[in-house]
Length: 435
Ligand code: GLC
Image 1 (tube, rainbow, N blue to C red):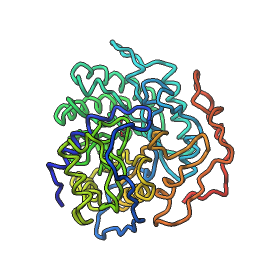
Image 2: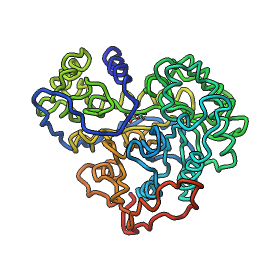
Image 3: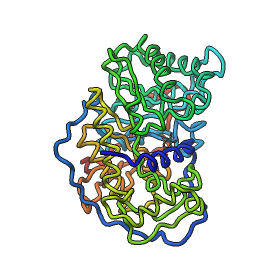
Image 4: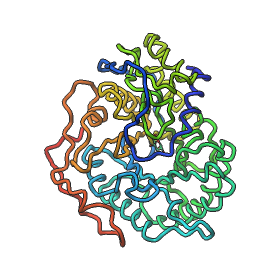
């Protein structure tokens, strides 16, 4: 299989100006007519003959607790991690939670780069909240933006941060995994990234000789940079990670944290659509977005950029890398914004989720508590369309009821200080289906 390099790379490189997430709010971009397209429910036929990747411990299905501890300060992006988050993950039958954490916003700027004790206590609480429910927890260093723009200046600090984190959690069970750096990008090019990963791995290994580590590829963890990752050959406990957001003009349509050329709307999955997209002015005047939208509106399914094949091309890379390296490959994020038409969103999430499972790749929904929300802790329930995509293999099935009997998120929010005792999860509605 082959990518369409020019288009895909253009799409990726432009995409990459984004990814300093923020509070999810509606975009007010100008746009041209259209935008009323609706997709038909997608029936998925998985391809035979695919060799699954090596399992990543017992991780198969999970959710991110995004925009909480990775926001500039807790609550700044509208998410305060709570027991209800973990209870809802468990309730849906998931086996892990990925916890994005901006440790760099809570560490001294100068040596010894001490991490704030109160903040650390909150991370202790989150780890306990997962482990006490028998969930794996992927602890991820997220949004270290300064490291991406000035890698040399921040290297010592990044190493010191991981030294502290690794030492603090060295006696935790193997169900705690460390993901060294979310979505490396910008100046942290593949060569620098490999060199930095080597140092971070050596640091963590001083206190955690066998804990499972996860490393993301360059370019916002794009699948086509998985192959540039170089990790110590003698260390079997390192998994390689990618994020799945292609086609990005579908998954990120109207995302407030993206550039103006992403602000079109009415893009369905799969294409071609039964009505044109509503193009933002910037999308129309930017070569790669205009050309993408033209192909999306005109091309049959076989060559359409919003298609099952476009998704499979990403997965084919991951499958190939898994076979070549013998390592587990992890899909630490995937998602589609809720501006997308609901049938399309369900089609996309179900397809990506099922492809991952078919290929032995553990998946973790990106849930930002906003426009890419999966769990609604205030209502104590999962968003219906997301639950259907994640828990029903076929379209048209009943929405699985994934609800907490007694959602009390305010009383179960992450403690201030010190860490609260574990075990205060709200009672679960035992009648709700997990699968
Ligand atoms: C990445 C970014 C996050 C963003 C998400 C979806 O995880 O770090 O901030 O919301 O991708 O774009």
